[in-house]
Length: 293
Image (cartoon, rainbow, N blue to C red; front, side, top):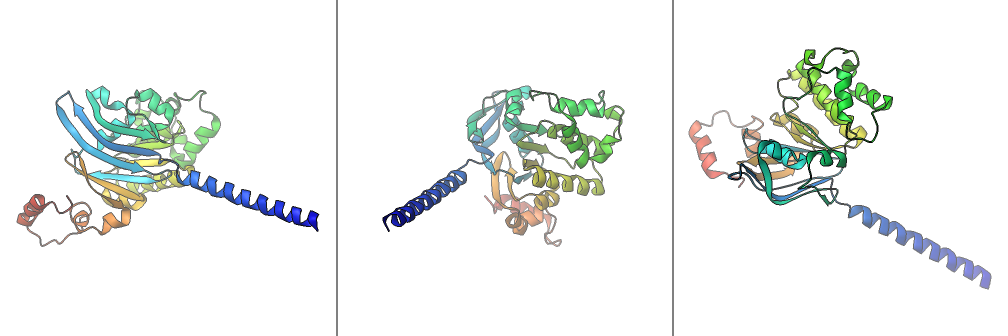
C-alpha cells in the first residue's frame, strides 16, 4: 500500500510539475516582444526640419501591418528610421526608440540592422540594372555568413518563376519583374522583417493583384513579418492584419484592417467609397474638423 501511495504521489507531483512547466512556458511565450516596436519617435532632417512627431507603431511577429497616408505624410521616412537609412539623407531619430525583438536598434548603422534581420525594399525597386538577375539576388545575401545556396534561389524562383527565365541584365526587365526581383533580393537575406515601400507603384492592375498575392504567401509560408507602405489602400488592407494611418508626420488612426475599412473617413478619403454627392465645401470642412484626431 505504501509503495502504491508513493507511486501515485510521485505521479501526481510529476504531472503537477509538468503542468507548471507548461504554464510557465506558455506565459514566457505570451510575454515575447513583438517583432518591431516604434515608440514615440521624432525625426529631423538637416537639424531643423521636423518630419515625424511622436510616431508609435507595432508589428507583431508573423503579421502584415499596413502604413497608409497621403504623399508626404511621413510613411517612407518611418521605414528609413527603422532601417537606419536616414543618415543618407541628413536625417536622424532625435527622440524615442525603435526595438527589434525587444532589442534597441535606433542608433545602429544600416548594415548591422540588415544583419539583425531587417530588409527594406525601397520605393522604385532600386535594383542594380547593370547586374544580372542572379547577381542581384546574390547581393541580397551579402550580410549572411555564407553565399546563398541553391535552396535560397529555388525559394525565390518558387514565388517568382518568371525570374528564373530571365538571364540578361536586370535593367531590361519589365516594371513588374523588377518589383519581383526587389522582393526576391530581400528574401535572399532570410529576414525576419521586410519593410515594403510602395510595391504597387507603376504596375498594371493585374500585376498588382499578383504581387500582393505573393506578398501574402510569403508572409504565410515563411512567417516573415511585413511593414507595408502603400498608396493602394484597398489592396494593403486586404492582405494586412492591422494598419496605421499617418497625416503630417503623425499617426492619426490605428486599428485592425476590418476596423479601418469600416471607418467612415477611411472609406471616403482612402478607399473611395464615400458619398459621391458631397461637395468640395464639405471636403474643406472635413479638413478643418479632422474627425479622427
